[in-house]
Image (cartoon, rainbow, N blue to C red):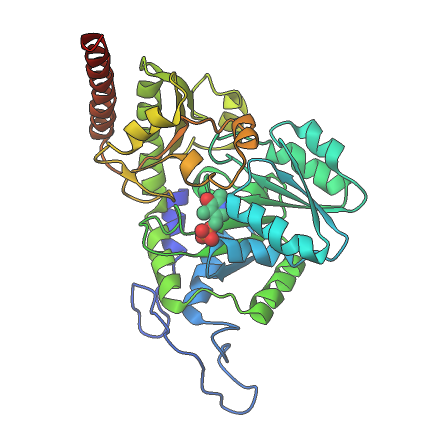
Length: 395
Ligand SMILES: *Cc1c(COP(=O)(O)O)cnc(C)c1O
């Protein structure tokens, strides 16, 4: 059976009524026949039938034992860190999602958990950073925004040998393109806000543990800390996942076309897209994943904030917004948005230079998106000519 067919039929028909769509069990509690005797559900923080469908679905898609759904991607990340204790260390990807950086540095640092950040696309650097206190390796691959790829299989071997867990934030790739647990990782987390939800209409997080013992610990923390996904948002996430295969296929095809167009444009200095042969990790990306995703970043020849603002403020189909993975294409300027709180020198050293622009390719036709960029770029040329003519005229 193809994975698309399997995905669609992994979502069960309601056993009670035959409803084809998963029912939304909007209830806090469940009637018990006698104290402690119930139909598998007693209170919706602990277990809810709608959430359970989503949790089993993501476990199946990621090929793990236990799936759990949270009120945001960060809540899922937070749950994983609760496996650690004071004195433990994490080795994490240096291009990490800003919210995870804040959680590690401003919340868990207070509890004595230390994080070392390295360029995980260089496996040796992880090996060198591990100490006898390291308990967790944290990857994002591809990373945001420069789309670096890390070798999950090689890093999983280092994790095993060092008695560490390996957790992969699989938000950018989704299980359609990449299944980290099958490549040796122990835990996968998702911001389901992005591709899994897919319609920019909810905030949700998911995690999957390969081993049921670790899964049970995480399930304990989910219930003990209470950061669960509500029934309606669980339903929305299931509804999003139903079309995940189709959407990802289209995101990938369109992104490749746009990336190739950008690469030959005279205003562009560099395009970051793992599907391009010029990407430094292209071969690894090809080996490790079934496609290259829907995110593209690029840097202008004129590497200034002003030049980038002229573009991000003037596209019409690409909407200026944070986030990614929805049906509408989005454009963002990391310097002034996602990476605003990072000091300029550190930001630039990580490749997030002043003109860097990120695109989240939606489900519009490639030719329309290219036309939008073409019109915007042409306008910049005209503004420049006008300014030059004005300057010459006033001499
Ligand atoms: C958005 C995002 C998160 C955080 O998810 P929320 O749902 O916003 O809490 C974590 N990791 C990555 C890679 C993300 O893009």
